[in-house]
Length: 235
Image (cartoon, rainbow, N blue to C red; front, side, top):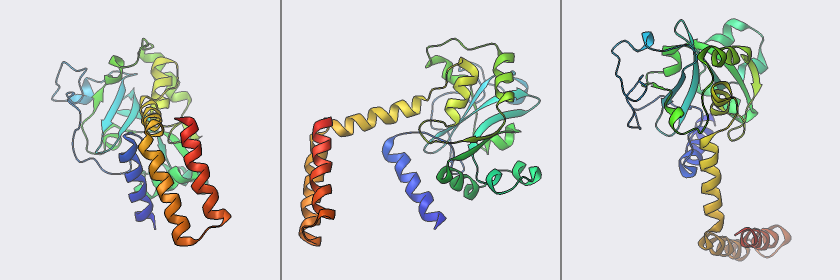
């Protein structure tokens, strides 16, 4: 069952072109940035180059995971996790979040802002440092203020794929405003989908097909009429 849900969530992320919290181990770098650099310098021993308050990104196959470097090889990051809801045992909670814990956290909308080592946060992938500074039209706060904000937020929090994910956490800490470029990309994709007249025609055809196969009833006729009408009015 969990494998099926994981597959469906992966397809959702892929079709929507969004990059949200990690569900799978990384398969390689997807962006052209140099790992553990500020886009210009390479480092053979990256942890020594990181500064307290740096915003870290881990590119994954379909999405990106974000965290705030706290110093001493520690990273604060928001990650979906069901375990804090089920137990108060801090030792169990502090263990690395498995895919099952993460998926159930997404479905139950529960997450933790937790502190892990750089290695556990990266999960084998290459890390980008402060790459978001080029796309966010805000000046970053001082490194110490960024780190302190992250440390104050450590603990159990509510989670939403679109409205409260790891990107909202790091942008609040580093820039003072919680926002997600990935959510904005998804909304733009959704608007373009609604505006596409072919989608309206397709929903009408599917509605007619469902009535032809299942018969005309309120359960088939209402969606067949209401969904295309709603898309038409929104387009």
